[in-house]
Length: 56
Image (cartoon, rainbow, N blue to C red; front, side):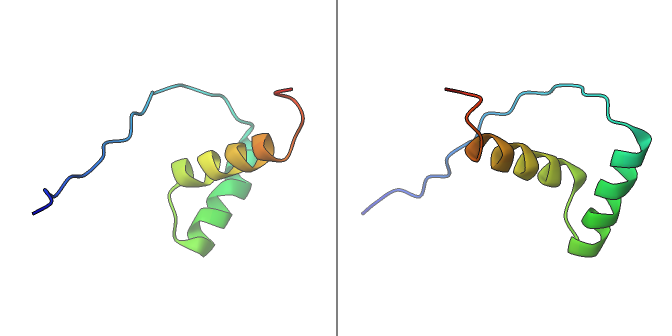
């Protein structure tokens, strides 16, 4: 019988500064989509990195 296992994802805390206007825009999206600001920021950064050539 297989054992039940939950993988833990490692996280790192960082502090960033955003313009007031940008935070207001992001908060509106979060309210409309019912998601956390953290989740939106992570998804936006992942999308930007996945669709750019900055890492090459």
